[in-house]
Image (cartoon, rainbow, N blue to C red; front, top):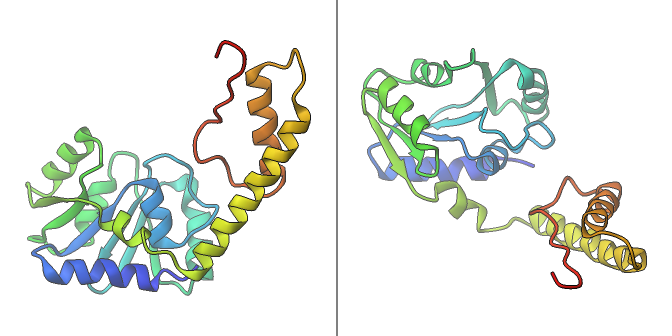
Length: 200
């Protein structure tokens, strides 16, 4: 996936306000902005930093090689920086002018917001839905992936209906359904499977 349009969307936001850069930390937004598939897990171990003229992914050593390979495959739009644990926001600060104001997602944990505020001497602005609003408009490639996800879901439903029988627990059904969907190409599940029978 080419992240250039997504980055341009963030830069348009930056140009309208008083902030020099935007830092995404929500896992879905980091993946969306970078376009790096199969690199990250669900943890908040990564910061996707977008400024007017560069994009920097700050991550830890566990993800560095995969992130660099993804960046190279994507045309080196993103520079990958490795931060020592607990020093990611200092790495962000070193990539920006000393008086820069940083926009961060208001969904970040409060403790993280306090930390970044300390590093930036409170030159931080919490913004709502910058990544989410970009993600609301789907590209043709994203629509195709959504259709594929629905096809896998449909096949999963047909499969699991044939698996049902007396004595099988709800937990076994959920495990079997997720296993089938992963074998069919799913990256995971959107939410834990809801399986209920009998009194449930």
